[in-house]
Length: 312
Image 1 (tube, helix red, strand yellow):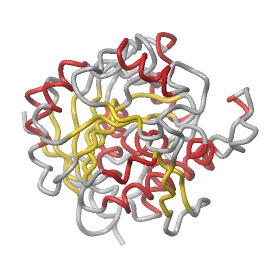
Image 2 (spheres, rainbow, N blue to C red):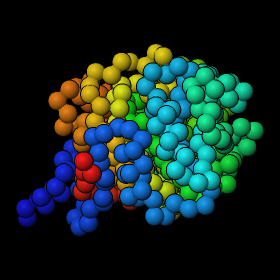
Image 3 (cartoon, rainbow, N blue to C red):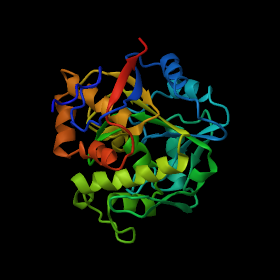
């Protein structure tokens, strides 16, 4: 039997195609507030009520975090919304709520409410239905105060995950700073190894992230959308702050979808299609980052088959 032809616009470098329907991923090469808002309005049908905007606000003075003015203009278009974050597992600028608040000020996230969802170390345990390894994940307690979730992601590389897209943003970002993030990283929360290079990596780590992301997606159901901004495509995550590597490839644009797997898949495919993406591809492959995508496909967390629809 002949292999099904790929959907137009979908290279799908992982080969994890489904038969049948394709998710819609909307795309622009233009990275600015106007186009961000335009894309969002194409997928916002089920966003209502109190809205959380999950953003990686970054360590102090991080050179690659999303532009504050762009995020400010975007947030102003969404009534009853706030940026949401959690504290970190590693001892950096956002390890404690006090330090996190100071870092938010330094980085310019002062134009709207920023809810540190685990600020009082309280958690809410969300179930993981049919996960790989986890039965539940401890999320920042305030997460369930919201009716809808916008996942606004700086798509880039990641030291452990290979790349950080929408899945990584909610899988690690919504987990509480100490208990939840320890669960997602596969370490003992009461005895976290100081040397993070000894933490579990590769397939196991990707599957743990998938479990955590699934818990958030199952909780919000239809009331969640995903926006990946492909700019400053460093091999480093924004958690590396000023130590992040300088990008060695050009910006690609913004991709949005109601499907978490499709949007991350599309962005990875665009990276692989880019002629200057050697460094980021190497980061993805050496960390077995493609397992993020195949794990989501295995658990039905979206469709790896997509139609890329440009608005340019």
